[in-house]
Image (cartoon, rainbow, N blue to C red; front, side, top):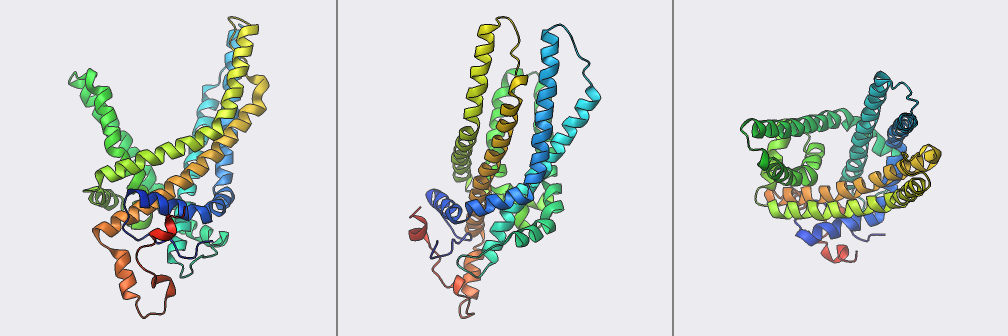
Length: 328
């Protein structure tokens, strides 16, 4: 149990961002995870079920083709199922983002050192923020996707195909820090419209480009490692099964229909891993976002100064909490 409250609104260097993030997750990770299962879990389970159904149907169709007895493939049903899949995962993604950031918001606003944040409080906050967050995240996705497509089309039209990969990769590297490290918490905590969020994000990152890029890169490594740990056992089982079938039936397409349970279990564990990695991502992103806000405006320090003599003990502690965070 932390004896001092983790202060999000504080200037930190590269290592201190991770120290603060892990210190916060040490005390709150499993509670946030439970709340994710309760609030976002049902939507993700729909996505998991639909994904499993798609994989089973595709496998049945592929197997029938390899055996020469082609079953009719209903593109209409496939399209509807795929759209339901996309919608359920998008809603689940918005729910995950809303739950984690709502928990952080309630933690920051609580005067207690170790606030006992309840599921009902988080759910009430999520209901307030859901549609605003969903709309802006959808706009961000469309905006970024449109920019990338437009860029590639222009490159093709002017005949610079050889540069497509390199410029596309550079564009990704350029946008990643803004999206991964700053934009999502800005959308949630900024409480403003889409275009102001985009503008403010660029303003925050200006002068802190390499720090944001480095944090995004290290954060991605941590997230991918956690995801790989959840995925690898099932991937290994699938590979062993495929090699075994190819050895016993040379020239035949591997049939995974007998491994439906394994496939479903793999998707479930991947989804749980996805949720765990997003807790890591959103917490680190929030810590860095408030770090950048403090560097630009110092709102957190101003709040502490204004609170002197107000009797709010949670704000009387020193600005720096590195000694506490370094324990983790």
